[in-house]
Length: 144
Image (cartoon, rainbow, N blue to C red; front, side, top):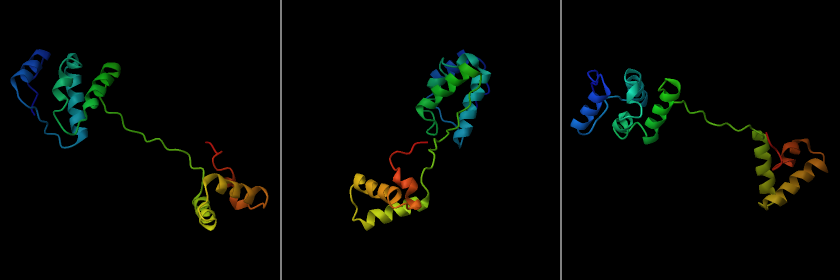
């Protein structure tokens, strides 16, 4: 889509009113987001006044809430960049050896209930002094 001629908010509105479905030529999400940011920078008045409606649903690579987030971000910071998702990583409490040991104990005792298996693990460490059971003896009590 060549929108280089759209210079004012009125021209954008006239274009949208006179056109049917709008499709982007961008192949990737980054390209579509780049177009939204470029349009916001070029036409600051368009933020929240028709641009969102123009872009929402115009391309399958832009989820409906993304345009609103881009426009809101632009209004707050002057930038229309998509925020990079940061996955929450939980701290690792148990080693692979702990997992193997737990599976071994569970199988050796016929897949008992969780509380029964927990008590076996506690006894192995506290009463029998088995160092390999130290972390597993506190299973369910560990926190980061």
